[in-house]
Amino acid sequence: MAEAKRPLSPHLQVYRWGLHMTLSILHRATGVALGAGTLLLAWWLISLASGPEAFAQAQSCLASWLGRVVLLGFTWSLMLHLCNGIRHLVWDTGQGFELSTVRVTNMLVLGGSVVLTLIVWVAGYGLIGG
Amino acid sequence: MTMKTPLGAVRGLGSAKNGTHHWWLQRLTAIALIPLTVWLTASIVGLIGADYETVRTWVSIPLVAILLALFLAATLYHLKLGLQVVIEDYVHHEGAKLAAQMTVTFAAIIIAAASIFAVLSVAFEG
Image (cartoon, rainbow over all chains, first blue to last red; front, side):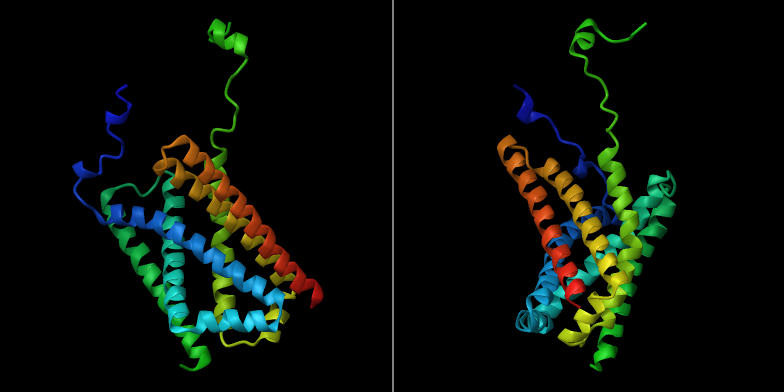
């Protein structure tokens, strides 16, 4: 009857945009992206079990420039989902909902994800020497 | 004195006491994945540039094999729970929703089984 006409929550268009809203949708987007990342990890482990040729092929795919771009995206997705996920766990205790607090934790989550990604890649490149 | 309607009493249905099951397991797997993710990320960074034998030797360390299996199980369970909600939110056609939920559930279980088996086979072969 009126089923198709009912408005759906949340009414995104009535709110003024905030960084927490972007982080909210990014949490979901990175979660889905990490599903693809998990496939990569599974493929890498299965290639390791399959033998030296399969493993060498997986390694060269991941080490190619395209592989590195994917792995960089994987790393940042993982770190953002991790940092924002920890914030979600804090929210689950009923704390941190004040807008002033959210503005601070927005920056902690975003900054934390970038810093952790940098640490991983600087350490990685440092290890293979460039 | 019961607050149930006569129809409710006849049907015998009530709260299944599992309303928070999905929510709770998503949190439980999330908490488990915090230390596991930090460990795995640091380990993989340490393995950059390592050859086939080195990586196999690493996986065959008992603690490493156990933590890898736990990471994969927790990740794929967490992934299944998360994708389930995404599908519930965006797929409104009943048939498509059912197909998507089944695909996600089967895929998560298959990937978990295959990847954990891969870890164990490396661990047992040495």
